[in-house]
Amino acid sequence: MDITVLRTFISILDEGSFSAAARRMGISRSLCSKYISDLEADLGARLLSRTTRSLRPTALGLEYSRQIREVLRQLDGANEMVRDASAHPAGALKIGAPASYIHKLFRPHLIRFMDDHPDIRLEMVLDDGVTDLIGGGYDAVIRIGFLEDSALHARKLHEAQILLVASPDYIGRHGEPVAPADLSRHSCLHYTNLRGPGTWPLRCGKEVFYQKVQPVFSSNDTELLHSLAVGGKGVALLPQFTIADDLEAGRLLPLMTNFALPDIPVSLVYPTGKLMTAAMRSFLDFTTHLRLS
Image (cartoon, rainbow, N blue to C red; front, side, top):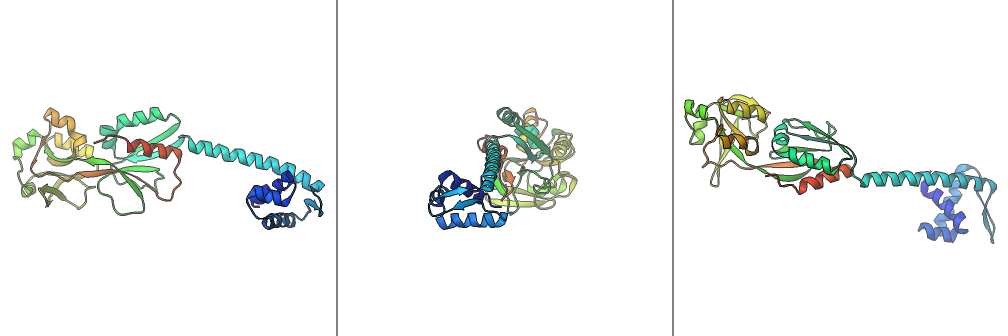
């Protein structure tokens, strides 16, 4: 039963006429009359006693109106509760992200978000793989790299600098590569989420070299590649934010700095066509104003 019909019935009793009730409801008088006729037909009972000079509820109509008012009161209260809840950032929020990104760069901001929004129950799932946003039931995921075309929304958070690095021990044993072709003679630690299997992009000026490498080790986990590079096991492409401390301490050395690697975007990806909760809106607004690079 259409709730508008019930509200129209109550309006007629409150206003005392179809015309006044129609104005209150913002509908035509004929539609107002039709609503009541359809309601009475549906219930199989007369609710209003009408004459040319008076309009009043029948005994059954009066009792029906009492119960309907209570139903509408409870409905309005429930609607208001939902509106209040949706306006206040609260409830569950599930975000997926690469582990190294959260630990090395985002964690202090994450703590501040929790301090600012104590009523949000945040679940952060850390996975360096390509997280299934829809199948995993996520509200959003943070992705590092160029995104495939899709029907998902994406907001770029910043760009991450990528460096070619190796440990002093490795360089001492194997020498330092100075040109892209040299990498074919080196032990390479390959990040499998890069576009192009076993291909590393290296830019010199406006030209980009897509150098084929033969990895001695591959993984989708940057922290594992990071630890192997520090351990002298090979040359790796790694985001600057994951290795800043090692560069400063000399545990890793930047290589082929005249061949700058293209910066890669870091994006917050979330579904289209999904009603956004206040918790998700708060996280989206929060990440918009962060200085992460």
